[in-house]
Length: 231
Image 1 (cartoon, rainbow, N blue to C red):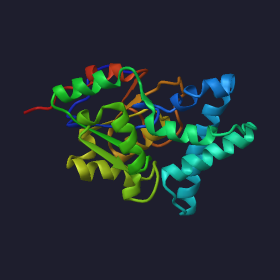
Image 2 (cartoon, rainbow, N blue to C red):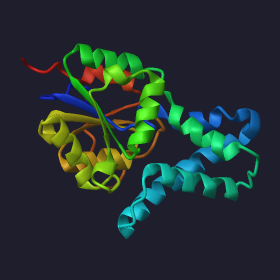
Image 3 (spheres, rainbow, N blue to C red):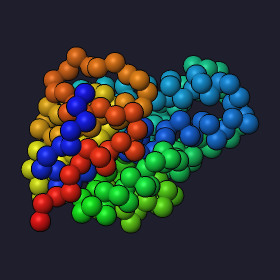
Image 4 (cartoon, rainbow, N blue to C red):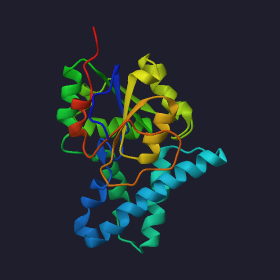
């Protein structure tokens, strides 16, 4: 895919989990208890977490992401027969302090230095996002943290992407949206945003409306794709 810079970008909006923050770090920091089972727990927990957001949205039975994450973990632990004292609470607390990917801090610094506005647009609840941003020390590099709780429905509903437009006060086409989740990237493209798909996990292209404008393997590639806003 072309590495020609995107044009007219005024703001960079990021998905949180899997894009800025490594959801696998929660289980990884329990390796002393889980051992090699982390290779089964992490994808099962994540897949069920996302499934529950979509299924709740279709049913019109919203619960916040903390509840969804908790329910998904319960499913994963029971499926894998992991009944270790204190493990569940430990994993949930670690989800509040997920590690940012190594390149994230420098990338955000470069974007801010170039005059671009930055934001998070996430399924996470306000409590979860506040906790993970504070723990990461990235708060001064992020202008806005937007949660789906404002509209009461999960991605990929268009109302979620509209949140960024309304909060930042710029048209969708002036937003570069970054996500590691292919379905999220395609939905943001279909909404009208310029999209950089951070394909960290080597996923295949989706067969969905929309199409990412650029694809990268790491956010470290992002600054070169963005021109500084015109003054």
